[in-house]
Image (cartoon, rainbow, N blue to C red; front, side):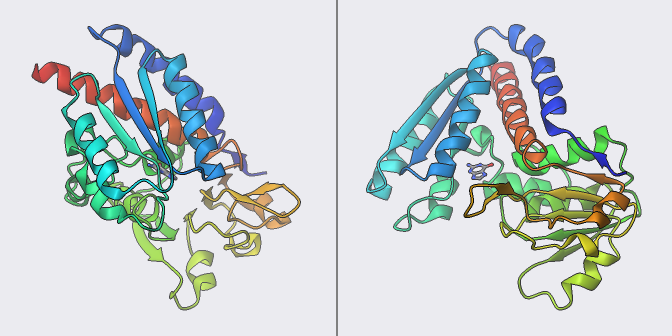
Length: 281
Ligand code: GUN
């Protein structure tokens, strides 16, 4: 039977461990979360981030802007948050409305407050092997793998999906852990063959059954980043169901796998940012 990598339990432990560090600071770490529009999934994610931030005693503010907000107004808000000494972390939830240039918006965030790790400066540091802010979901995935003792060194890792949020940064982290990494995407020829030879599989495409269970090699570790709501309301990941998963080594559940880890790593990044900024005076 495959080991289930329980993200809820590990996230709880990681959040708990942050409490002492937060208490040691002269003021609470400040996190500003910007939500543009009313995408229901984004509202749920942002709400969860708020709940955990408040529970940990962070100075949390959520800024809700209507979907019709001109981009220049959002940029102005980011400028104000960049200049606010009590704000240590800024997160602009994506996706953004189509009239906005996502890269221009994310590039505007002060890299020293970029707790999402999406700024090219932070992505560049990660690519150079000297990470500062690492994107929350990839960081959470690596924490889950480490917690369960999943071997990475010399192992074949296959990442399905190459987004800035998950696929690209997690491939860099797996590479830094000395796995041999293959990044697959919609144009990949024979995805099945790539997945079948993988010791570690990370699936982050946002499509149910993107990787069928039958492709998973016995003993492999599978991290399912997908959160897809089916027409009947059920929540499923990107990994298909099937008896073959019983022969896997480790599998993340959906929900309760990667999701809670993303939030815990956002809290960790925010606390680290506050520690760093306060140490600089
Ligand atoms: N949308 C989905 N995941 C994320 C995330 O980790 N950060 C932000 N800003 N938006 C997201």
